[in-house]
Image (cartoon, rainbow, N blue to C red):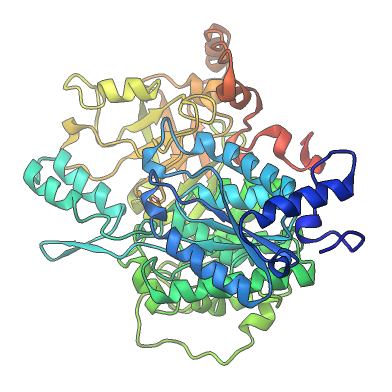
Length: 571
Ligand code: FES
């Protein structure tokens, strides 16, 4: 692109020298040093935001996937230029990847705004990466299309199929109960994650891939293709081509991720038995676009949306089975009557147009159910309120024990993660199977970073007990299961009612009435509040200080207040 034409490619977002022609001359000189011809330098530029890292096993296949994206961009007449951003490997980060999600989103937004890009391909997968990429791209406002890493294949241990990481938790619980020994555990460790790709079940990574497709930000079918299949490379190539089309269509993320698109994503989240983390991430992405995600809407959808997918941790199968059964295309066809079909997608077609193709129900498979014969008649995720969670809390009904959904129990309180680690297996712990385990100070500020600690282990003292009601302001891995109340808002560390719970208090969980209540007299709670210790001082410097001052509560997506859309700044 030469001077004088509409800014595109290297003429876009010039470095400020006070002389635009000089800035372009200098930029092209340096770009030519990379060996590109003049013809190549005149093409529109598609950035490929690569989150490959050797500290992120889930993204191990990205070098090959990036090459496939590049092929597509070249074929469509664009210039593909790859660049890195922060990568978040879920199990390699301290204290938790959630603490760094917003930083990654800032890096994405700032670099998309700073560089001469006409469109971008967002390459993510492991839990927080797709959310951070979508948050950043939503704020940057340039045409964007997502390509996910794709799920791992399953492993095998003595004939038992293994998939990270629901089966990691299942075997770990067996090890804690003394049902398997260290030798068996070591063998299992080598089989749980046998290929590159994201966790093999409907954990947070697979949930976010499905939601990205449901939002319209990924080409159809992209969510479920296993990481190591050739189909994924073909999908990546197609996505590269489509990125160039998005430039011609001037199609920005705000035209795709509309309020209706988020409602579709909530419906899909219910139907796939998706991760509770999906709610936080959707709220954060929506917040970047000036849309406030309504938790009441999510709860209402739980009553009208059946669970269709028989995948762990809700059901029995794995992501590779979901792909073979037809993937998201089948889910969207089955949910057609419950979705807004007028929404636009990165494919350049509305959802109605995408679904207006000959479709035969894949009757040979049993992974995806029909709406008239669902796995569960009601959606997987519900929202609780009550005096313990004035701004809401989440329960994954689809993985809970039905007999524990309407109970009253005695609170056994752990004041922090450290307290939990120290006492949970103590022989002196005063605990009964029908007690309610309470974890405080594990929310966005409390831990900090809202770790996936809500899946409190069953105390060793209760050997044989498989599930208990557990409540906290923490999150839970999408691969976990049990009767677990999460994301209590406001959290204990900011003085939420959860901080007032004492050992021996009675707690009521009533899923029918959507209530979570502390059965303690108001006067006593006021006394406790008045006696509470002063809040700890904020960190003195660095990202931790920025985080402490800016992080919002779970029901708002745990985004930084200054990153939300201007329309929502004071809400
Ligand atoms: Fe990366 Fe599960 S650890 S998706």
